[in-house]
Image (cartoon, rainbow, N blue to C red; front, side, top):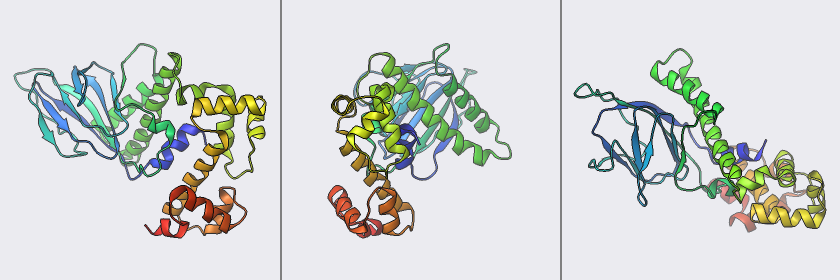
Length: 298
């Protein structure tokens, strides 16, 4: 598994929700903050997203807005339109157009997330990500949007399986587009880490085989750097030393296995690189604040 896929997999919970919405002018809906992530995509017309702080974000056809932390926001045809409130995670209903005006058509959706151990790659994301439609950009993302829109507009046999899979794909393509955009404009942090050959190679090695007894020297060799040069570069981009990140990732995997499986503690210990159940339990309690058995029962 690569870092982005792993980061998403560790926090996903439940099934995502999505709907195709048609709204006529004027409209304005306030969405409360929630514990997941949400998105809006404009298919026809134009509207705006209004964050709690800052000015409105004007959206045209093809624009994507992603809210990775479930921030409160409003969606309106105009910033001047009075706001109504919808329940958390509610999806908009289809509304007939009034006065013959062309409706504003959107795709809206929400992901349920477990934020108990969010990956730093996702934790550093801003409250609102705006990906404006640009010719020749985000082709894979545009294709996923088209496929999802078609399934929601006209459900067919298999749609119940296709829609969740397309939503998972859409989430990854949104994040990929954001990190590519950041890297293209000299971004730092994880956007730069994913593009740095040596650091990216080490991250792939860690995520591909987290139970291996990695050393800083061995991880540096994955990208052709000396121990010291690699340690400096990794720490500068990722925000923590290589072995600190490795230990954190091992405990994150262990926490998910404890939550989602009945695997014995010894099996989990071996999978994340510990030779004994006792050593694993000690490390897990130090990192997570609870013994593995107590954590599994919470």
